[in-house]
Length: 567
Image 1: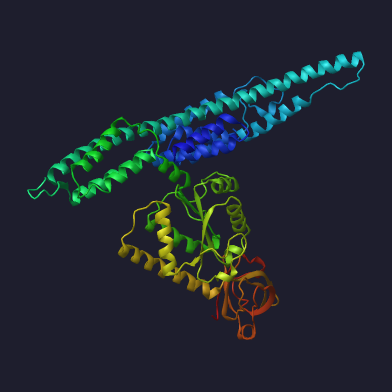
Image 2: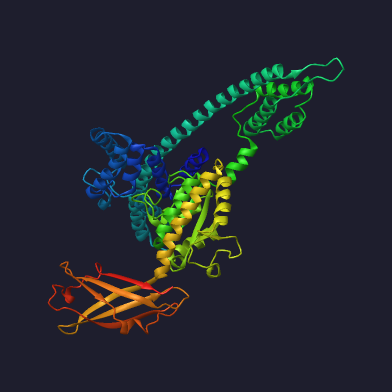
C-alpha cells in the first residue's frame, strides 16, 4: 500500500459523496489487509441496510478476520458493540416524514449507497419544486404555502442525509490521515537511516584511502589509491546517490569524478569525499526524480485473466510466479479462481473487477485457450484491458494454437505456450525486471521450470484426451422394462473432428440409487462429432429393470459421463 494511494483516496473522499460506496470498498480492503478491525466493521456496517440479519452476517464475517489477528471472542464482541453503537449515533436524525427510512430509535437504517441515491433524488425534487406562472392571487397564495411546506420537508431530509454522509466521511478521513501519518513517520525514520548511511560511507572512504594509498615513489611515480575495496566503495556511493538524491546533476558530477578515481591520486579521492560531505546538508526527504519515474511506471500486481475451466493450468502458473519471486498475496496477484487471490467476501464481483482493471499498476496476463474464447466474462476482461491500455502478456495452453488468437489481443505480439522452455525463460526475465526482483540462481530456476513443464504436460494430456469435448445427459426416459432412452448433447468447441473410443454413463436417481450404462459399438463405430458441432442425439440402452434405479427420479446433477477420444 503506497502513500500516494492513500492520498488519492483521501482527495476523492473530500471531493464528492456520489462515489462514497466505491471509496468505502477501497478503504475496507485497506482495513482488511492491515487487520484494522474497528475501521473494517465501520465500513462493512455502512455498506448494508441496518437490519438484524445483515448486521449478524457482518458480525460473523469480521469475527473470522479478528480471530486471525489473535483477538479473543470476548474482546471482539466488545469492539463490535462499540463500533455498532458509534454507527447508530452517526445515523440518528430529526424525525422524517418518510418513516420507512428509520427504525424505532430514529436511526436511518439505509445503506450508504441508498442514502446517496435518495439525497440526489431529494435535491432534484427541491430544485424542481417551483410555482407555475399565471396563477390567480388566491391560487398563488395556496401554491406558495404548499411550496414552502414541501421545501421544509425536503430541506430537512437533505440536511439529515448530508449530515450522516459527512459523519461517515469524517471518520474515514481520520482513518486515512492516521495511515498517512504512519507512512510519513516511517519516511522520517528512513531519512534518519539515510544520514547514518552517508556517515558510514564517508568513514569507510577515509579508512580505505589510508589503507590502500600508495605515496609518491623515489622514481617520481605519482601517488595513487587502488584496490578492490576502493572500487566497491565507489560503486556503493554511486548507488546511494542514485537512490537518495533528487538532483540529477549531483549524480552525474559524482559519476564523472568516481570513474577516474581508482588508480589515481589523493586529488580525485578528495573530490569524491568532498561531494559526500556536502550531502550532509542535503534534504533527503525529497524523493529522487529517478524513483518518481520508476514508481509512476512500476508494475506491482498481476491480473490473471482466464477461464475457470482452466483453473488447473492457472494454479501451476501462480506457483511458478511465486517461485520467480512474486509474493503469495492478493496485493501482488489477482486470480478470481484461487482462494486468497480473488474477490474479497461480500464484494460486488463486477465493481471489484472494474476497480482492479482501472488501476495503473497492473499487468494483465491472459491465459488463452478454447475455453477462454467460449467465455463472455473472459472476453469482457480482454476488452477492458485493451480499452484501458494495460500492459499485457498472453500465455497459451498447450492445446491452443497461435492461429486462433483473436479479439483485442494483438496476434503479432510475442506470446508463448506454457510448456515452451525458451518462452518461460523470457517470461521469467521480464517478471524479474518489471517487479525489480532478485535474480534466481539458474540451477534453482531450471528445477522450477522443469517441474512446471512436467505439470503442464500432465494437465494438457488429460485435456487433450477430451479436447474440450462435452457429453451431457439431458433427459432419461423409460421405454419399457428393459430399455432406457438417453437424450444426449454432444459439444465440440475445437477445430477437429472427434471420434470416441468409449462413453460410459453413471446415472443416479434422487434416492441415491445408481446404474451404469456403456455405449455400444453400434453407436460409436460410425459416430463422428464434427468441428464446432453442438447437437442432440437419442440412444437406447438395455438395462436391468430389477435394479433400484428409478428413471423418473433421475438426478442429472449427480450423473457422470466418462469418455475417451482418438487423438
